Amino acid sequence: MNSQDVILGMLMKESLTGYEIKQLLENVFSNFYSSSYGTIYPMLTRMEKEELITKEIVLQDGKPNKNVLNITAKGRDCFNAYLLSPLEGDSIKKSDFMMRLYFGEFVGYDKVIIWLKQVQEESQKKLDQLFEQYSLYKDEMHPTQIICIQIGIEEYKAKLETISHGLLSMEQLVEEKSSV
Image (cartoon, rainbow, N blue to C red; front, top):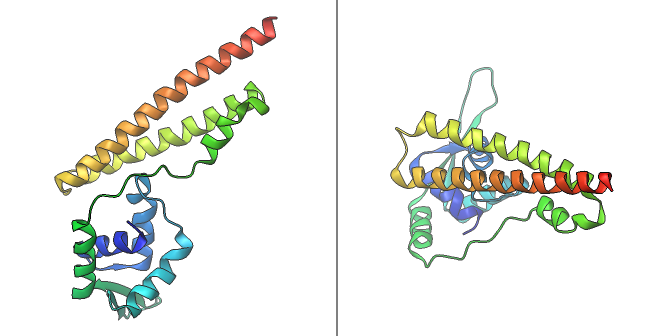
């Protein structure tokens, strides 16, 4: 799976602008796909040259023209080939937090507690966003999309539970250290 496959999949359902694709990558897809936003527009340009998509310029009064992207028959074939190919193994996104946490012994418990609280807050926000997306769109979603959101919800719940236990553990270690 690569950004091209993801973009083609988005365009299978409806025509979109580059901005709308960026929004989907930041919101819906960020829970299970990591993409560099700086590569979106060069990717779209390349996909247009390869005739996987076409660009339609829509004139707007008082606003800049809008470039609406459509998938071509060749693009549909390419996306279907991806869907029918063997599943690839999942990979964990790069995590600066996990790397720092792993080496947390070199900074002390107080700093680790700060990191844990920060990631706890960010993860709770993402979980809340998933719940919001689910409640807003569940009636319009395909059952497979519901499963994706449910997996994301469960992953964030597990992460928050683990962080909560880790925070308790770190705070106990700080107390033990200060009472010695």
